[in-house]
Amino acid sequence: MRFDVVTLFPAIFDGYLTQSLLDKAIVRGLVEIQRHNLRDWAEDTPHRKVDDRPFGGGPGMLLQVEPTVTCVRDVDAMCDVPARKILLTPQGRRLDQRLAEDLATSDRIMLMCGRYEGFDQRVLDILQPEEISIGDFVLNGGEVAAMTIIDAVVRLLPGVLGDEQSSLDDSFSRGNRMLEFPQYTRPREFEGHTVPDVLLSGDHAAIAKWRAEQSRVKTIDRRRDLLPENSKPNHEHPNQRS
Ligand SMILES: Nc1cc(-c2ccc3ccn(Cc4ccc(CN5CCCC5)cc4)c3c2)n[nH]1
Image (cartoon, rainbow, N blue to C red; front, side, top):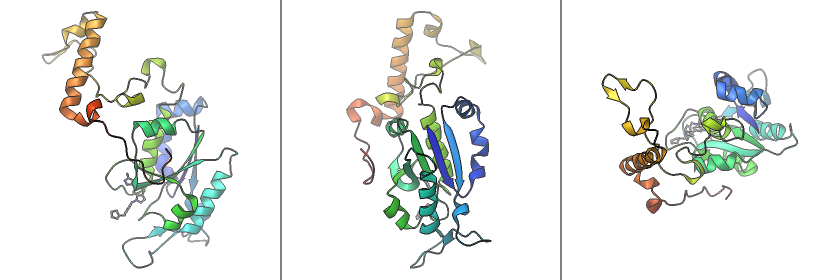
């Protein structure tokens, strides 16, 4: 899979791209991440301006339609595979595991990271990107949201996580909607806190039963909304794919 990230701050991704899981996946050719600095498509030099004040007044600045549309079209044309265009915004469809699984089926994804007060509306009207939010809070730009999407998607790609780390039985994966059971490792006792005996018993049926019960109790306590009897569809954003 290839990600193309359009951003004013490509350096924000430096540390993230060298972290082990992603670095290994890139090295193994399972994923490719290309960054594109929107400022390289600015019309006028030397200021390389890509933002301007909103018509009608209001706070802050907006990213202008001309450099953005030109940039996205040029980036899209850099590779034969057309990119699934995603614009990060607080107003988008909420990212959840189902959407991450859907994104993981794409061959190429372009992540459009805005800054300031966002993009001129005509960027959305012309390019018709899918709009995705990572939660009901306002970040300072799209880059952290873009990294979140990359993180959630890359781990789902075949071969990225070793079999022993499979994402198959994550909470939320493949329709699983229960919270995780408590997990323990050595030592068996720490400051008087011990490991539940059942986990040391070697009785795999009893362990599975205990874990299922722990998940159920935790889910009822913290996220009743996840229980099958309470589930409701994730209302898709009007311009979202099905
Ligand atoms: N899930 C999620 C995604 C983002 C996100 C993504 C991209 C950008 C680009 C710029 N911003 C900052 C920003 C500032 C102001 C407004 C508009 N105002 C907010 C409250 C009243 C009107 C919107 C946005 C982003 C934020 N945040 N949270």
